[in-house]
Length: 218
Image (cartoon, rainbow, N blue to C red; front, top):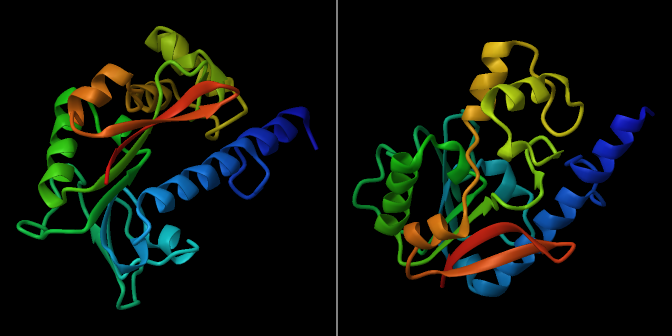
């Protein structure tokens, strides 16, 4: 096994339950279920999620509606999947849920105005939410596992992800790599507090440093 593959398996491999990212997801799930002990009886709206996440979870809510640009099968009666924009989901107008969940979506929707749109959707569908996003000032950019990538100029970021072997697969074209890095905007604590002023902001930590921010309203 190559050195880069070994490092990727330790850091970001989703199929390795011992990887840092897998352990972080498990810790996050444990915190979610602690904050929402009645999850099994809730009607959940998952913005940016897919049915498989809930199929594989240790606790299955009473009903889940997932919204994602990616099509997915949802044949079970307890889950619905809506193909669409989570910032303006169609067919959900007027519907209320017990809980809105969103994991690692906020940094990908495209600019502050779109993040505000998503926050408005979250607030509009439930009084309770769990909204997670990677923290801008964690020293390793999580999508590519590249130290300090988020602080580099756009051309340098695009060049790095064309060559860097960790995280997401290398992106060969200049236009494609530029598009990929511009589509990923990590958030600060200030912005999270602005978007979710009445929420508790939980700091998910790694090595004592804040790795992700989670806006929780229970």
